[in-house]
Amino acid sequence: MKKYYKLFFMIAILVFVFSIYRLFPKQKLNYIALGDSVAEGRNPYGETGYSYADFFYEKLKEEGKIKNYKKEYSHSGYTTTDVVNDLIRNGDIKRDLRESDLVTISIGANDFLHSLDLKNVNLDNLDLYEKNIRTLFPNIDHCIKEIRKYAKNKIYIIGYYNPLPFLYNLGSEKVDALFNFIDESYQEIADKYDCIYISNYELFKNHPEYLPNPMDIHPNLKGYKAMADTLYQEYQSQKAKKY
Image 1 (spheres, rainbow, N blue to C red):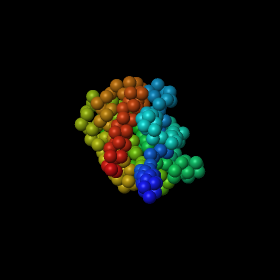
Image 2 (tube, rainbow, N blue to C red):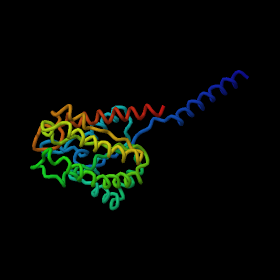
Image 3 (spheres, rainbow, N blue to C red):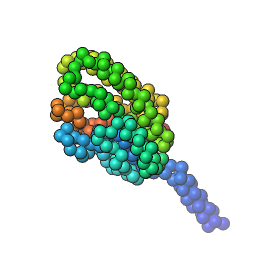
Image 4 (cartoon, helix red, strand yellow):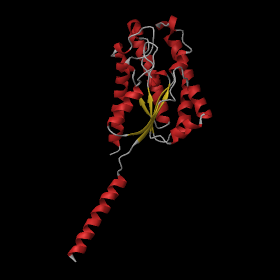
């Protein structure tokens, strides 16, 4: 009888361990990065390399959490319309979003920049800039709504920095107010579609060295890495809330 008790005990332990494994598996993530040149990794000198998405991916990879990573849906110059058109025309992106566990997107900057004369940027026009931005957020809303149709898990919306740091010298309070409005508008969209919004405005305001080329609006590698660190911290915070 003792043999049977031992055998029964061993089987019970194995069943228990297997059940725990099934309940709490080590999740491997399908990560999709969407967006514009900031997602793609355009640097201040016109070259394409590591973006915040790549640095974030490296952090997840070090922890053994990545199953698949795709950044090919991020393109320099992309607007909200381009992303929506991809969703309409490209079956691959719809499939990948359906299978995704994690999506990051930075979109909306080109919509705004297309309406901006960078040669004549000044504080006198900030009210006009805000007016232009207000007309763009319905497009951003629609873009996130379309992504959410397919991506049913975590979506992180990556916020923008002030790409023209010299404006701070002209009037920091007005610039702060403009970007507070931008952050609040993105946050409203994130809340509406159950996404997480990551603000990067203060990060770049406190580190102007992340934008070393006054003739270009893109961050250097330090800037992209700092964006990835901010994203990773929020990702870890979201994970902690689950337990």
